[in-house]
Structure formats: structure tokens, C-alpha cells
Length: 140
Image (cartoon, helix red, strand yellow):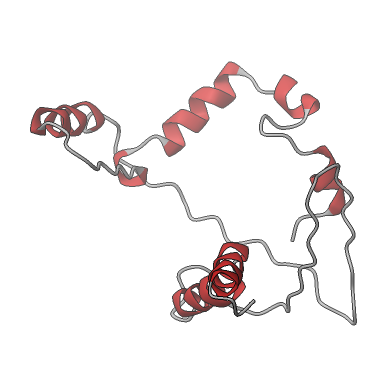
């Protein structure tokens, strides 16, 4: 879904041309559209004082009402035949990743089951832990 050009040129701050074209009015419009009560999620954990929760609710409750329109997910390019993308990086690690395009998106009923299966069967950390345990037991 991400073009190779995007992988080469994207930065966390955006590209120089786009950053330099942002106006103060653009920033204000973005703030007005997205910084709303209905578009806010806060998670607190640990031993916080109840006064913190009350202050957050009070302060953030002053945000304007409104929910921005939903942006449809991008439509990936059609899959035809075999394709390979080779990414060369100056890194001490290597990886070979394979996949098959499916029509499952976050929020669909099957996504969570697939995420659990991927976590158990596919994560490098899981495989490394299994190999380490096997080696420690003399099985690897």
C-alpha cells in the first residue's frame, strides 16, 4: 500500500515542500476539525489521583463538539502475479517477509482472530522465545 517512493522520501515531519506550504490558517482549520470532544480518547493507568481525572475531564470537556467525517481506507493496487520488493538498508538484521493480500481491515470481525494468530505464529519474538526455550532444554 505504500509506494517505494514513499519509503525513500517520507519523514516524520513530512517532505520539505509540504511543510513549507502550511499556513497558520491550515493549522487553525486542522485544530478546529480534529481537536474535538468526540475525537478524543484518553487512557490513564496506574496510581493517579482522582483530582487528575477530574481536571482532565474539565479541561478537555471545554473542547468544541464535533466529529470529523470518516476517511475511507486506501484501496491497494490490484494484485497480479508474483511481486517482490527488495529494500536495502544499512542495518545489522535481515528479514524475508511474505504475505497474501486479503480483504480484512481493522474493525472487521475476523481481524482480531487473525491478529492473535499472527502474534502467536508470526512474531519474531515468539519464534525466538520458542527457540531459546528449546535450546535451554537441549532440544534445539
